[in-house]
Image (cartoon, rainbow, N blue to C red; front, side, top):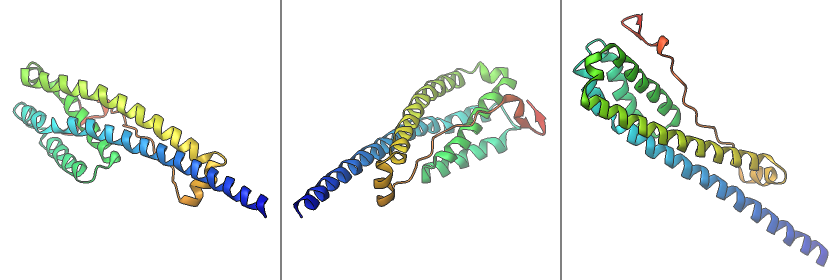
Length: 179
C-alpha cells in the first residue's frame, strides 16, 4: 500500500511539474504576442498620417486608402494577427504606389513617415521571430511524451505561427493596371 502511495505522489509531482512547464511556455507565447501587438499598433498608428500625406498627391487610390483605414479599425477592435497580415500587405501597397509619384517621394513628411515605418518593421520582424520561436518551443513541448499526456488532460492546444505574406509589386493594380 505504501508503494502505491509513493507512486501516486511521484506521479502527482511529475504531472504538476509538466503542467507548470507548459503554462510557463504558454505565457511566454502570450508575452511574445503582446510584443508583436505593440509594434503593430505603433505601425498602424502611423496610418492616419500616412493616408493624409498620400491623399494629397494621389487621387486614384482613394479605395485603397479607405480600405486601410477600415482594416486598422478592425484590427484595433479584435487584435487578430491574421487581420494584421492583411493590413500590413495593404500598407505595403501604399509604399509601392508612391513609386508613381516623385513629388510624394520627395515630401519631407512622407520620408519621415516612411523612415518610421521601416524602423518599426524591423522591430516587428524581431518580435515575430521571438514569437515564432516561443510558439515552436510551446508546440514541441505539448507534442512530446510525457508532456503530451498532461497537455491532452488539461486541453492545451497548439499555437499558430505568425506570418506576414509578402506582397509583390507587380501584383498591385490601380484602376485595372499593374503599377
